[in-house]
Image 1 (cartoon, rainbow, N blue to C red):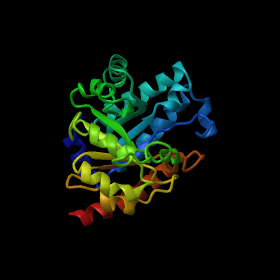
Image 2 (image 1 turned 90 degrees about the vertical axis):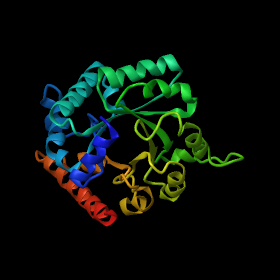
Image 3 (image 1 turned 180 degrees about the horizontal axis):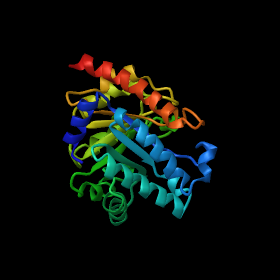
Image 4 (image 1 turned 30 degrees about the vertical axis):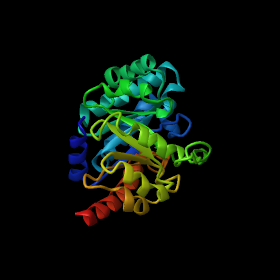
Length: 273
């Protein structure tokens, strides 16, 4: 998918919501465990009810890989279902891959060619040769970890060098590996105080911003600095949406939470016009 298609979908839906399908077999409604593929059944129900209110789905691959072969099958069934039925929705493999060049090439083949995700998250801290194999795929997006939402970001990313923070030096080094059409950055919604500085470096790149919802990020606060002329933001929410209920109507409850967040986004976008 081209970034221009994503921008059009954002404008059509008045939403920049990304829903994280971080589907934990231990957290889905118990009655689904009787299904042949409980993970896919859960995902399909969530997707069917929430797709009018979001522009992206993000699958954290760890929740699928942890189940072995069956988890990979569930992930493939999920991405195939989205691509077939909702092709305008931007898909993210939250895999946080990154290795030496020939290995990164295989990771890119996995998620872009075989699984047919639109994008994949990448750990860029090994340098350019760990990222560039992903950038060779046309109409695919590499999402580099910039400043993450976890508390451990303090350990390395927010350490000061002689010049600046480590994560700022990483962004400076990486910003020209690709361009605004094939590269995004992860910036945690729990760290709004750094967004203005980041936008000064990469004013036109999309930012994938996790941390709104269960992690406590404030939507209005991050949007003050993050939104650009092309919106330029995907805000991810996972647990607060997909685990809104354990009852038979769990997907309807998830849709209700998605509607609330989309409604706030619609107000923010109306103020930008």
